[in-house]
Length: 313
Image (cartoon, rainbow, N blue to C red):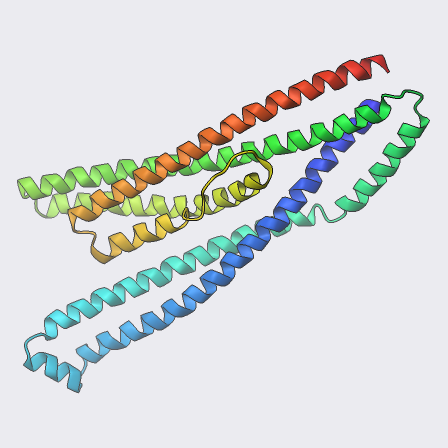
C-alpha cells in the first residue's frame, strides 16, 4: 500500500507542476501575441506608406515630374522600392511569427484540457494519505510520505531540466546548420570578390544565404520554445540564465540580410552573431546539465533513504 500511494503522489505532483507551468507559459505566449499584433499593425502602416511612395514616383505627379527633371527619379525610385521590399518582408516575418505563437498557444491549451480535474484528484489523494497514516502503526509512515513528496518534486524538476536541455540542443543544431550555410556563403563571396566569379558564384552565394535564412526562421521558433522552458527552469533551479535578448537575435539577423545582403560584410557580421548565439546556447545547456546531475544525485539519496525505511515497515 505504501508503494502504491508513493507512486500516486509522485505522478500527481508532476501533473500539478505541469499545469502550473502550462498556465504560466500560456500567459507568456498571450503577452507575446499582443506584442506581435501591435507590431503587425505598425508594419502594415509602414508597408502601405512605402507602397504609396513607389506608386507616386512611378505615376504622373508633381513629385515624379520634379524627380525626373532633376535627374534623380531612377535613384529615388530604386531607393523607395528597396524600402518597400523591406517593409513587405518585415510584415511577412511578423505574420509568420504570429502564426507560430498561435500554434504554440493551441498546443498548450490542449495540454491543459487534459489536466482540468487534477486539483480534485490531488485532494482525494490527500484524504487517502491521511487515512493511510492514521491506520498505520508505524511512526515512520508519515516520514515516508513526506519523502515521497520530495521525490516527486525532484523528479518533476529533472523532467523540466531535461525538456529545457532537449529544446536547447535543437536550437544549437539549427544554429550550427546556419553557421555552415553562412561559411559557405562567405567562401563563395570571397571567391567572387578576388576571382571575379560573376553570375554563377553570386547565385551560389545567395543560395547559401537563402538556406541560412530558412534555418534561422526555424531556429527563431525553437528559441521561443526554449525561452519558455528556461523561464520555467529559472523559477525552480539554482542557476541564473540571461534570456531577455534571445529572441532579438533572429530579428536583427533578418533585417541585416534583406536590407543589403550583397555586401560581404553582412555575411561576416551574421556569422559573428550566429556564432555568439551558438556559444550562448551551448553554455546554457552546460549549466542545465550540471543542475540536472546535481538534482539526480539528490533524488538518488532520498530514494535510497526511503527504500531503507519502507523495507522495515
